[in-house]
Length: 443
Image 1: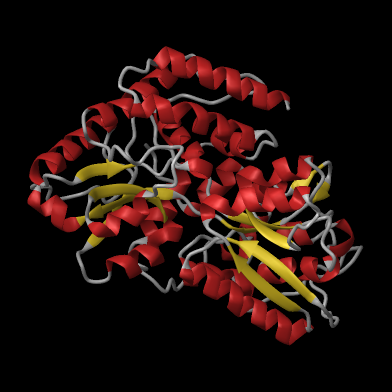
Image 2 (image 1 turned 30 degrees about the vertical axis):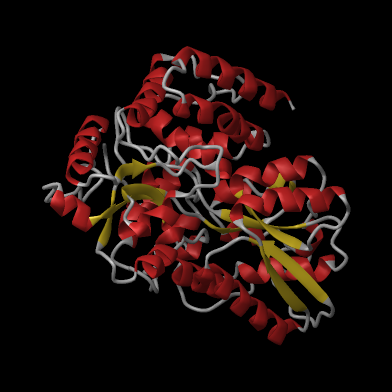
């Protein structure tokens, strides 16, 4: 495995362009020079109230509220931050959209943006931004904000997964060192050995849990790509799961359950999240996103020491494209103010503030190399930043397809039974996934 720096990775995957790679990292927010159309950041006074519907940690909610207050002070319009549980956000938003009662704005993962756009519920931002606006962001993520040639949202941040572990449990198991670089990351076989030691040394404690739950089910693709597999072929039209690589990934994942190395109650279809259990010391190690660092730190407090290391690898290293965008609904009664707030959220100053307060990664070109002053556990963040360089280009492309919500749902519907039933066969789940994903591609 070769280790890429963050900029090299962003260049290689198309998330950041060669021209943007030369962008300077000066302080303060900016107003881009207009090259036609409306200015990227306007300054006129606005009235009324808009609602941003989101999920979030305490730190994320606080950051949203602070930026909302700044927007009100600068522009006049009020912003209400409505917070919903993560496992309810899509259901509630979908129901409101169907009832023509949608929020003005909502937070959405990159994997879901084009699915909403295909249903015609997102506002076209074309008349509110100029041609230079999109040049501020990593091209791969700005491309994910386009539908039928029109911008339908703003990229807010990205994040990725790594391994979070309990140092006391490791010490009790005689595990005296963990990988300190991508090159030294555990192989699958080595990870199984580590989990076996944890199981023996810490009775009654589950050694490990993946973060594959519900809307995050797609994170199983990390394991698939680590085995050298893919979800789709190069045309992005045909499923490629009936392969030795995919079957190896499925067999290995299932084996963690059958060998008692994975928390049995943490599955795919249930809102049982490993990051909520980890602070209780009932799980020794979890796969988790960097955005969870503040909530983990708050829940753990001084109960025990914990650390972060790199994801395991088989034939390759791989991790998921995480992060979220903010979109404005077509039915917003105060669309102009909603769009202006979306743009305000992603100025350099506000994006940097949000990322530093919430331990997520920025998606602006002028912040790609910035040394961010993360509020919580800044010593752990370099692991996530380096792990982010292992996002496979094919996985990024798959994750931003309009059909990806259906692909994720196929995992939810098929993987839960496979992992909870020791007698379930790999061939059966490959068949179920292939049929469901192929169907999702045709919608």
